[in-house]
Image (cartoon, rainbow, N blue to C red):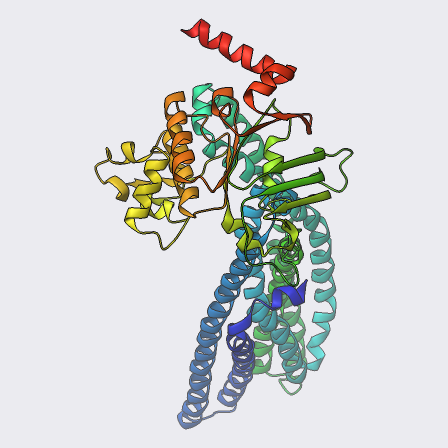
Length: 580
């Protein structure tokens, strides 16, 4: 895990090395200053003149400025290293997610991936910042100050032997109690993010069903649970400050008492005022170092949970990979399912698709119908390898899809999924997802095919109209037509419409199908639909039932021989008659 995360430092290695280097110089100078201060006080006691005072003062001033400079440089390089490390970590995570198959996305869930890319990366960044600066400064300061204190007054060092165990035991107890709480927090962050994501993306449904109060209560519960665990953890860690203050005062009191007793008893021969003053300063440095070490320990331990979650994503390999010697061209749009089986998980009790045998010629129009849960979407997602078959063989253009270069295959198979997504940007920018080099004429042509041109022309800015995130400023039917146009722009050999004309009227649906037949006759067209009218002109219609092929035939053949198809057709025609 550490090796995986450390690889994200990359071009910031120099900054990462310079940070602790300047920290060490800063600590050395800070520890020498009290030593020089003791010499100055002792010199004054012995009647030093102003020349000696200025000499010591000038040395201490130079050291103070040098220490300040080293501290500033360590802060500068630390900021560069930590921010650069976090940037690279986010970059690697995001690129990793882009390569994930649908199965990998299902494994982690969208809300969890968002938390890992944001909250977890921030925790790791903060821990990295503390490790290369504070985690170097505090132990180094502790050791150096202890050495200097022992040199100045060995007899007073016994105070540390009493105070340090008290502080160490207290910190261990607090950390042991707080860490399990911190480890639980991140799962609750996932739940909170999921609640927010669902609410924001489905805000229209929430308002339509007047479920605002229910969503607010759900969010409050998740927020309260998160707050509860944070509060428990913070209450435990809150004892850190008073414990530290107690140890500081106990140390100062012990050194002052023992030091004063020694000064008075020996008349200043065994210990003088300057040395005792420096001992108090070193005591503060030692105890403050311990306090920071406790903070580092808490922060790093808390970030270990985040580091494990991030490393999980970085270590996970996509379930779908390019073959060693991939095929880089698709001959045509023919599709063959030969005994195909599919399950979303290797641990699944049963297959989603079972014994699928379908043969589609290039350029054919194929309709797929079936009830909810008949696995229509699962079937078509196998064609561009969004998922891999778990049994049997699926060929496109006469070649097993697992032998193709992924980009080549997906470039030739355009899918308009059930959940149509438009991104923030102009209509042109959205459509050019299909072909980034498409001209304005190309865009207008595919929009006419998808019956989108007529409503785009009504917008004040036409094709330069800005689409809000998620396409919230266009209707469902308009969004579907723009997504179809985007798919067409890639000039695919196979075009798949997964119930993607459900929000358009039957007349527009018919015009889209007519345009497809006339303008892209060589493209294989697969149409999943709930309406019989959307598929009845297809060359063949596939009826799915419970993940199996129930029947294949033309509209007339199925109407005569298939009970499921006949029942759907009859019920839809009856509804149409009642409406009319």
